[in-house]
Length: 120
Image (cartoon, rainbow, N blue to C red; front, side):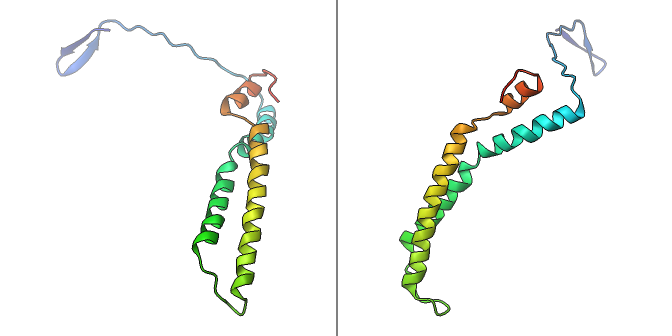
């Protein structure tokens, strides 16, 4: 492509185009069904972020805070609640990680399903 300056404008001597486009024809209800089915899998494959953040927060609190009596609840009871929640967050993290590996979906997988490449 050659560009020439002429009267403060640009004239194009030659234009070469090397683009190709795939067009997908699909009905709205079929697209909606595919998206509903696959978006939940896509979300499950990203849930590990919140589970890790929850575990880090609870364990960080557990190891850095001195638990005192609050609203008539002894400090040992409050610490016990945090220990229980921290352990529960580890189980939740394990569950979420299993789902993450089970539903290892990407946006390309949804596109393949839309193109009818049988991804489930």
